[in-house]
Structures are given as C-alpha cells and as structure tokens.
Image 1: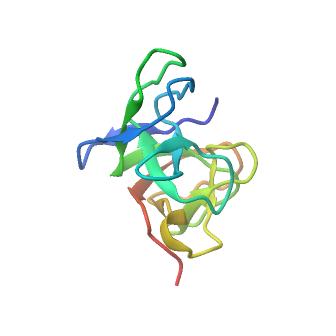
Image 2: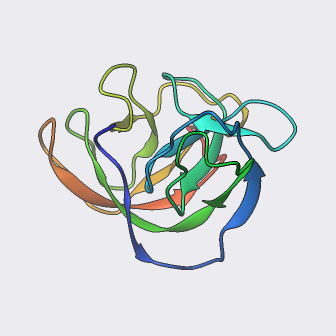
Length: 135
C-alpha cells in the first residue's frame, strides 16, 4: 500500500486492536473499525475509522493484534486540495490519501488539517482526532 501516514508528534500512546493473522498492514496505514475493536486497512470513504497503524503487521505471522494510534499529529497525503482546519476523511480512491470530509456519521471523521495542501499527492500535517465532524 502507498500513502501511509507518518507520525510527527506522539500525543497519546497507541492501543491494541484485533486484526486477522492472514492480513498484512504497513505501518502508517489508515485503519477502518470493523467490529469489536477489530481493525483492517481502510477500504473507502465513509468508513468508521479505528486510527493509524503504529507498527507493521506481517501476514501469517501468528499475531492477531496491532498497535493503533487514535490521536497524534501526522503527515499525510492529500487526495485533492484541502483548506486549513478542514475536517478529514479517507478518500474513495488512492486509499490512504485524505480528503475533506463530506459526511458527519460517527467515527468517519479522521481529524483536521493543520496545513493546506493545494493539490493531489501533496503531503501535509493533520491532527488525528477520530470522530471529528463537519457541522
């Protein structure tokens, strides 16, 4: 996977989520909450966000848990131009790239932009704040 997020400032410690043994998850992957504190790589927009992978998960390594950041300041990749302070969510294509949030359902909000990227593919700082929503 590409477009992983990079931790810049750790504001809280990562916590354990369940994950499937047979799955591979790169460090920095935006994760989707599926059920009972279980995380998978995000699969599209309007998905409930678990957080960002704090470590790499190797497929079939026998592990069924992964450390996940639910807060912090990260560098991410924009899917399109984003205004400073805009609420964020995962993009529908180029998974892992971030875009301006268009829905306010539960934990679809990933956080908010601390910088204003003006094009697809630009990196920018954002505050991971799961559940942040548009008004």
